[in-house]
Length: 355
Image (cartoon, rainbow, N blue to C red; front, top):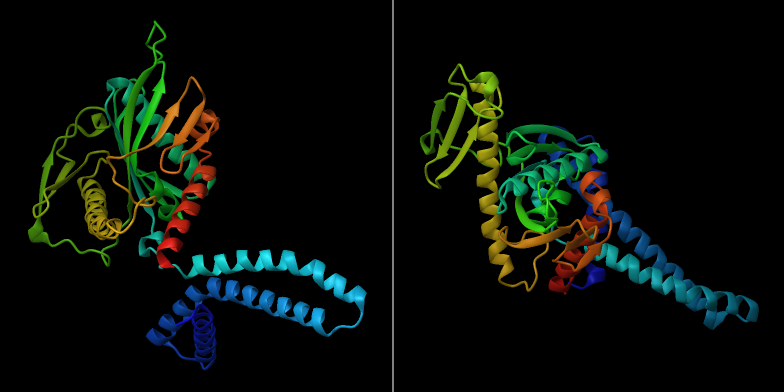
């Protein structure tokens, strides 16, 4: 099927759905039809804009050949070139809208940050990264629920996780998965030597029970007394929970809540999302064999970004993007410029594969 035939088929289907919805259908049929209609709305608008521009170009070209008025011909000639450039952009926008959607893009995101190599300095960096994502979420007006924080007592985080809810949360944050490296002079370093340390970020789509059901026979739940940073307020009862998924060996612990029931619910939410993500990773790995460079969901052991404080530099190694505004990015959570560039590169790669 040609590109034009495909567009015509989409517009016809949209008209059919509109007519069906106008007949007063109800129940499951209405829900299904209205969802499909809504899902098509964006691409239909882009196709309409593209078709209108094509028609306008055809009219201008006809004017060039049939019009006797030289002034009108000159006006048409001036308008053709910029319109042809506009049509190229509109065609690309339609093709991007037609790319297969990641079903997880509409989901909320669970973000997990863990200190890597570098001791206390790595833990301090992990805390900075985690807070950077919280500030970014707040700028996007997304809801943030802290799931767990294991702090070091002096401002660092061994690990921390949060559920970030809102339109586009996973679709945008998924590009942050990987190893983040920092180069800076630690506050405790008297000689002024630059240290290098790292933290690992994992971004998981929040999985609901409809996405993945965990069988009771596949998990073991242990309770124990909470202790240490984050658990002092509940260390007189066995409220902490450890959930082990027996088939995969995945273990999730939760002790931040006073209630054992709440800790169990949080642990199961994280476990479900990790299992769902494992399935997605298997699919991504299969796709990656046909891709030279993967932007969206690469290997999480890969170093994706470096934050160099002496140079005020942030470099994303996947797209060779360097910005000299580290405070705006880390302290203020100004991540959009990086994320937009990553989205664009991902679209370019997927368009190249689709051709």
